[in-house]
Amino acid sequence: MTTFDVEGYISRYPLRSETRLQRLLFIAESCASNNNNNNSNDNSNSNDESSASPSCISNAAEVSRTAWQLVEHHLKSVGNVRKYQQIFGLEEETVNPIIPNSLHKSDAESSSSSAPRHDIQLDHEFITRTTQLNRQTFEQLSNRLSVSQSQLSKDGICAAYTALSEHHLLVSCNPRDALRCALRSRDFCVTSNDSLGVLLRIAEVGVWTGQWGTGLTYAGRGEHAAELGGGNGGSTGGGAEAPVWVVNRLKIVSGVCLLHEGRYADAARKFAGLPEWDGSSSNNNSSHGKRPSTATMVSSSYDVALYAGILGLASLDRNGLTTLLESNGMKQRLEQIPSLRDALRAYQRAEYGVCLTQLHPDTGLRASMVLDVHLSSHVPTLIGMIRDRCIVQYCLPYLSVNLESMARRLCFTSGNGGTSTNGVEELEEAVEQLILRGRMKARINGQLGTLTTEFDEQDLNAIQTNKLTRKVDRMGDRFVQNVQSKLLRMNCREMGLTVGVQPREFDAPNSRAHGRGSGSSAAEGDYVEYGDNYHSDDMGIEGDGSGEDMDTDAEVASAIAQGMNVSPEHS
Image (cartoon, rainbow, N blue to C red; front, side):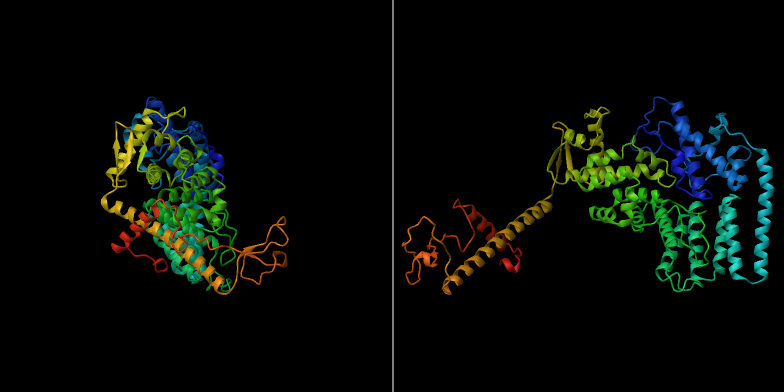
């Protein structure tokens, strides 16, 4: 069990932003529903590996209470009266397209449960005062739009529609009207940077309305426009490239939409391709020198690292994970989540037990996953994919594996660290599903407690052919090296060069050297020539006379007779 700091978590997001509100609501609903389930059924198994509920959080009740208080403070600060009434008691709450359906209370639950989810009393004075203020603000924005339309000012019309879109999203709690105004503002963009900003706003509003196809479409259009040079038409851009904050936020929207559509590998590549950039602050200026709005921002830098790491671990191969870890942007972001960084590195080093331990339900990493508004519903699928990949990769080098040893190394263990019967049974069930789905070619021996990998005739022939090919390559390399050495020695002898050693100091001064010189003494600088004691295998492959090389030669001849392709340099 782990604790969760909701205040520290939510501080990553801008104060007046839709993502802050949606994430707070999701955390409050999740922890409240988990607390109710634990109270109603204490005997249920809440530590299920495949569960996406925040049962791993020990302070769920406190987190839920704090989240509701932060929701109230946020709604009062932005003046969202409609959402305030829906949550705290006057109006019937609408279905949130972002929050999973499992967290919405049914009519039977609402009627049978009289206990409130929170202890916050409705503030009628706030409702009356803010409703009137919001009405006046909406009238001012509508008059601003009318004046701009009468003056035929495209820049003014675009700005008015943008303000109305933000008002509908944050204040009126009407995301569909916000999307409609954002779409209308696109027709009145003056510069290409304005067009990029509008495309970004449409894509982000599409995320908060649950329209993943709309968000992905407009994010793709924005990325394409940015690649063509989004700032070339700006009045103050001077031919500069598209702002970095626009491009990065477009990629984040694309990644989130791909995540919701189940395209995990594509989403991981989107998040991993982001350069170094702090998603929580947009200090770059737009084409008009204005600070970009963060009202519709989807994710922070922490979320990008979490999404990229988990999705990459579940869907990318080793080369893809290496690229992900070595990119400069991901190196910086993964420092915010040390447990995820360690899990990625452990998978690369084939330490699969360490990798799965970092994703255990009692860790803080799993708490961040199950309380993320976009990732939570995909946690069981992603954890299952990671576990299956670790099992498959662990079995690849072996023909037979002991299940108990495998369960211990992959951390299918009991609470005290030892291998339990349930752990082995859980591993057997996972392997059985992999075999049924065709992910593994193996069979389980229940009596011996082993897992034996099966190879068909084609696989065995391929393994033997590869082994023999590598053996031929090594033999050819040694043969070429020996021939080149022998040719060098023969050339030295033909040119009259000798290879010898100087006599030792204790040798007689008048001792003669055995060479082809004029008979001078060794003290005069002659060298002693080696004898003609050459080995019989100087022109061939080295051997010890045991007959092993003859068998190897026979194998090579047999392979060549069967039509194997031997590289020209070894022929």
